[in-house]
Image 1 (tube, rainbow, N blue to C red):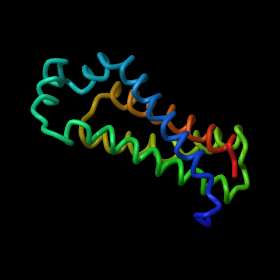
Image 2 (image 1 turned 180 degrees about the vertical axis):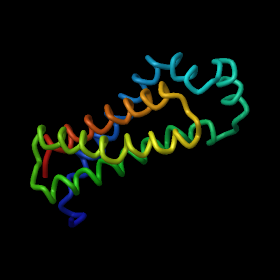
Image 3 (image 1 turned 45 degrees about the vertical axis):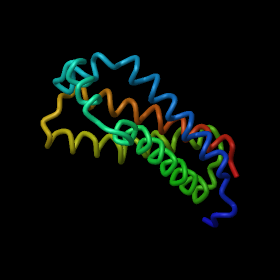
Length: 142
């Protein structure tokens, strides 16, 4: 995949949309998400308050960079499949989520002893992100 032929705008738009989705998703599920971690809201606030400078924002930046990389990778997959359509993007995003993201989260969280609710919430967030990225990159095409 030649870097000059990549539709970078589609990747950036997809990453921004997925990031906004994540903010809304986790805001709506904040109470069960915190509980699934075995924490309280006060504990989370104290942890955040203890962070200094960029450390407070680092997770948000890392997620955005991850979504940019996902957009670029999904773009490459769609290019190799010649599947630049909304449908192609959605199917590819769903398959990538099912085959790689869900399995990785479930495996890692099992070893960490995380609750099933946390797996479901986090995996659901990434499913939404990959469907959004796939839809936008697929629909905007080359």
